[in-house]
Image (cartoon, rainbow, N blue to C red; front, side, top):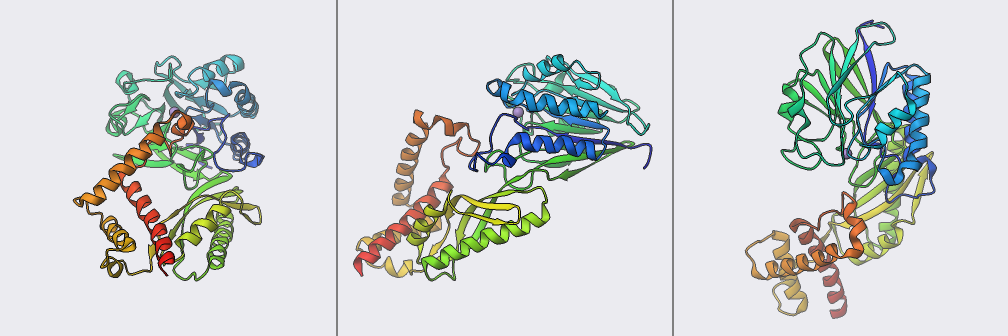
Length: 431
Ligand SMILES: [Mn+2]
């Protein structure tokens, strides 16, 4: 192995204390603390030089006691193994992390920039290679309205320099340390290890790596695709990153074409096969994966709208298909099917199915000028807003996916699908 070589295992947004939503709570392997333990083991097994934690490792003060134990145990194991830890605090753990640093009082644990002041530390790789400098800033309280980069005062230095920062990169303003990509790129930093945004991305801006490792374990269906830790390698000023997909859970949007289904049983079989094939394929590609929560999107031409709706209502949350160690469930479904009736033909009459077919054609075209379609959309928007703002659904507004009321395009698609169900009913009555 080259001497000028430093290996870093990076994660952020672990949110210890939180539970992934819409999956069985009794399954311990899906818990965040289980994947955190795997992260610690991975760092030890790979004998990395440094573990970098980019904030929001602990969910919040409410979960402090539940979260603190696994965090402290993991950090202690890393230190016992001789791995240095560099960390910054995020908006969720701005007070939990300084408390951990005080409790541990260990030489190899570096909480950078508590209180919102930039700070740096130099770490020597275990193989005796060139040192790497880490520069970091921690959240002093739960919200920060300005960019922390405004106060960054660090000269270009000889050792390669990595920046650790928690905040909302890409945003001009916001409550969580809004930072522009160009500003990150202008700083004399070779690569940024970031936290706050849960979708993993290894963006490069003007050649500079701006890595969001993303949540270690995905926490809700708004965090689809593979998640895990990132292995970052520093050789001279050259920094590379590679995902190690440690997450045991995956949220996945999956299309199901029902054009060839003739009966309700065909629909059920198609869905079960889709779950089985998905579990087999993903299990092979991702050895740590244990559970896939599917959001099914039905496509194709069919006359089975009502049958799909009824069958899937029974399957959501109850069906579980397992292939080897991977289980697949359905977390939600959505119909984007199209009718196999001839809407143009139906719309020629002015009986109720004819009037409805006309409206469906307008919704299908997305005709914004049509007065009747606009009225229906307006009423749907008013009705969904009232439900959305009702105090009884307040917990849903904390979920990234249900935070905002449905937009115009969502409403149009919901109305279209409900219209198709109604049309099937009306035609069944007429026949
Ligand atoms: Mn955050």
